[in-house]
Length: 319
Image 1 (cartoon, helix red, strand yellow):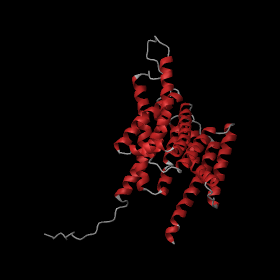
Image 2: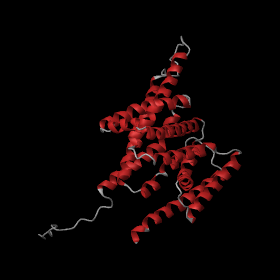
Image 3: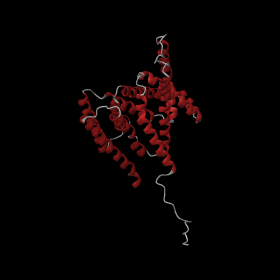
């Protein structure tokens, strides 16, 4: 019998990713996939008006994220924000911006303009560069300038092809860009920040739904599909908007803890890519040659932007 050589002392091959990086990658992937498929979820609610959907999203998100904040013992941080008028004023502005972003996104889904919405999230990183230059005094390098010019050319082509400015894309890109800019001024945990924003909107959303509920026509044979009266499945889906909002936020917060901004920056394009594929192949939105050229220019700009950002972050380590 041949003796089996001992394996004691054999050094195992190093893992491709550390356990922390693996957790971060899985969390980021989960967050961006949920965000990427969220148009399909909201499409199931297309029989409900966008204002009603956004109101339910605010109410149920408040409950879910507030429960998370209490469970993670961060309620004290929430109270500190409400006691600080300066920080609360910043959150009032971010609340209006994120509310505008959510409403525009849901309106685009309800009106078969998912592709235009995806364009907004592709443009967003380039808008962040532009806002950083204007408001934070950051300087653009040559490749960042090229990226922004390519995005402007793409928007111009879309405008000529559509016959009107692609305002859905621009509202989504700039509202989220200004939102991120203001949130940089207050270093607050993402879940706590979302609770502040949703609680500020909560009274308005609740009042709107109560108004719809009590002004609905009485005596109808079926439940009135407005306010808080819906068929059972629709009501479950509306409650689920809170989960759809809170879950990717939690996953993103975990990912941000373990991954570099470069990795997250590259992975964030999963969401608008899923939006675009869904728009074209599931909902049959038009994707003709002018749109292809416009998207191609913006994708090229993003590739240049990503490569330049990656090289920029590696350069100090080489010194």
